[in-house]
Image (cartoon, rainbow, N blue to C red; front, side):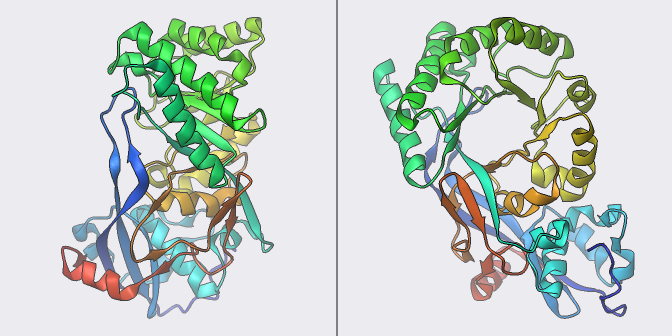
Amino acid sequence: MKNFSDLDSTWRIEKIEQALMKGERRRTAGCNARLGVHGKEVSFPLVRITIGGIAGYSWSRVSREAAAAFIGTPISEIFCEDQWIKDRFQSIQFPLFDWLANVRGIPVYQLLSGQSTPLSVACYDTSLYFDDLHLSSEADAVKLLQEEAMQGYNEGFRGFKIKVGRGAMHMDLMEGTKRDIAIVNGIREVVGPACNISIDANNGYNLNLTKHVLKETAHANLLWMEEAFHEDDRLYRDLKAWLAKEEIDVMITDGEGLAAGPIVEWAEQGLIDAIQYDLKDYGIVNWLKLAKRLAASGVKAAPHNYGGFYGNFASAQVYPAIEGFMFVEWDEAQIPGIDTSGYTIQDGKISVPSTPGFGLHIDTDLYESKLRDGGWAV
């Protein structure tokens, strides 16, 4: 509901606070094609914004100096009907959406989409990294990743994304590529034919390696190939023609990180099937606008989320408002002081809580102790 007449015109931003929240994944995440071990710890800056005596909590990287400049701003200068939140306040849009949904007593998904019925959202487990580099045996490596995939399966996931590109940096080129293929095919064996499986090379392949891997995993029926190489329209045109010739039905997805400027235009030309700008960094407001443009060309939305914790829940909440949104990328972790129990995963779908805001309960006592121990408030 982008009509803000229900808000008290005297309300202003009274306070903005930020504390670093820390927790852990269920296991250590290894390397990908271009980075070292990701580790077990997760952390993110949790911002609390207070307007009219009502608090909203969410992720934000806003600096203390920028936050100080927002203090005293009336709500009439913050919200707008054409894009929800004006450009100047995009850095605090997530806590603002939480605040607005709390004021209205509804979940963010209902705020953004109008959907009032219970929400269930498709998701996939994004935790299958290079956890096998210490193993010399390919068979042992396959077994380890199969066990990790089954851990996700037993937790309710029915979609998986597998990191590939071991030969780009961490292993011999052909040995690493051979292991990539064996692991992908091995995971398909244990999770069965009904699960979605995608692979992500983090730009660690070139065109010919991409073709080789996709041909050797064709019987695994991959859903998508993500970041095969840095976006290049000429290479993607060649890859698309090759896929058609080989009758391999796999989507091409890209856009995470330092994406090429023309990537959306290339998608509209049919070279990329889904755009993957990070949900938090790109923002809800920009995604809502982009999704309408993508939908006009049949391009899907698959927002990136890894390493930010809050993106799990924010992605699920914005799902029905973003046209063509395929799956929530789920990076399982727990952080003390943040109750995530309203979200449950079963048969490949997230049940999203209908409680106000983003559906997370914050332990205010713990949060305030974090503010005193290294946080800030303006």
